[in-house]
Length: 135
Image (cartoon, rainbow, N blue to C red; front, top):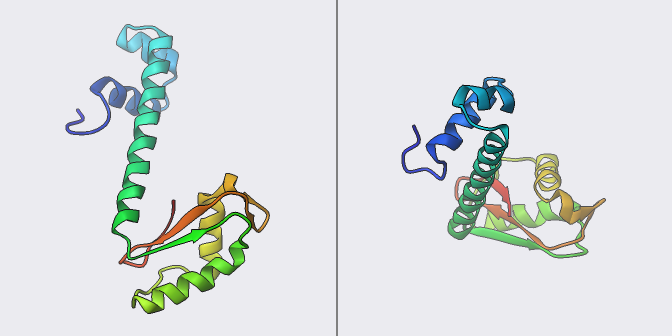
């Protein structure tokens, strides 16, 4: 099934069956293996997908013309102003509004925030296409 991906055939099969609503026990019976083995396959598949997603984010960050560091203690409500200023300097049109950028930051940096303040540093990336990523 998967060619040139981070998933083995067994991992892709298990995720496909889970997406169809099968339980791990039903998948184990269908594949004639143990539920524990199905659990391991599913966990490793999800870890591989997460690793691939982090790799894609890093690749986008490395190519991005704008990377803003949000430092510990920074107010995230100030970030959109900084982002729009950097976007203007590079002649890139940001695809999100100020509230959308703040929402994106809250979703992407969730555990690095407390209220409006950054508790850990993270980056806000603006791609050449105007997309905003949190890394």
